[in-house]
Length: 555
Image 1 (cartoon, rainbow, N blue to C red):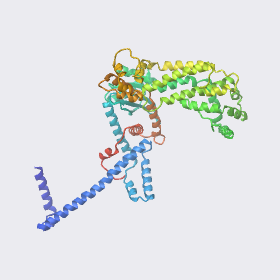
Image 2: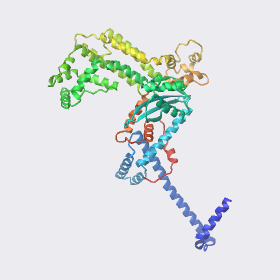
Image 3: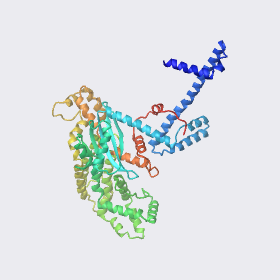
């Protein structure tokens, strides 16, 4: 029926418009004309194909550039600048054909914004598939505010599949429009996780130390427990380590150091600061200035203390030359007890800095993070023993001061290390019930066995014994599902767990660059898209995305 209708329509079209022009041709002449018309149609089709093919390439290029811009935290309007630069370079190098091609790439700020959102949706779909196919996943969440004072809840997911492939990705950036109470955070988190299959596979949740997160009755953890979410929930290991270090950083010595630094280099004392810098330059000291210290950052405290101690004598001489009321500061820098504290503080802070740096980084397992903490506690006990015997090999600044003063006994700081050990033990007691599991994970081939189980077979497996030198994260995937099903799931469970909110903190740092003073009106959808692309490790196939899009001319 359809073919008859088509034939009738074509016949009517021919009779109405073309019968007078083509009926005069008959026989071979008519066949020759028909062949010419067919040839002309093919040429038109080929020309159309040639026009569409470059447009497909320009779409891919548009996606690639937009992805690079998002990863580099650039404004959408920079796309036009990149395009103009590419055209200029092509013309300057004599590649006029390439310059013409660059002109056709759509990179307006509207197009880049749309491309970034499409790329983000592609990544989000991949992440959702990973969660659906994973064996376990854990969550890390933290809340902060952006430059517009709008609260943002960031949720990261760490998933692991049956082949021990681990992935850490941004699950969502959720705006909290009103209050940021535990109930608000719980509602936002529950809605997000429910869209991805719920908490059934969740192996652990880690948060920061805010009351809205960890409160016994009104924190998000309390709401999750009331909702029946049954998994370990921890306070971030890095946060707890940082809080423990404050019992040392907030000493009187640190306060006096900050007073002297502020006197020299801040406020309205610009002339005094310039004179001090010139003074250090004339002496050719190791550092050209003294750093200011942020109370938030342990690393900045260590740098500040190290620099201050390095040219304490130069600071004293500079204060003597200044025509100002500096008698109190000069007295401090000549006081034996202050100098001993000034030497001890950068030494112990240096040890804490090394620990803090070892805890940072992507793909850290909860086992390795707790191992660093446990190792540091043992290290502090060893340092304490050295101090009791006045052995200063691990305290280089104290060793320097001991050669300059008569009262060179540093045993007075043993109590300070006692306080540090007690604080570490108190803050990390939540992990004590997992210590046995951590020990099994770290040494499955050598740990003492009290009862017959899969570990007995494991420790007699000659193949696995020959792999004992492998990194532990590479050893566990070698366990077969057939012979060691329980141990394999045990390894998957531990490797899936977050131990810190480092990814959240890194994301907040990225957010400050993305939603800056110049881009403070960036909407929530674009902000989340840029953040996801900046932080993702998912491979994005721009050709696949471009194949689904209709090509448009440059704009």
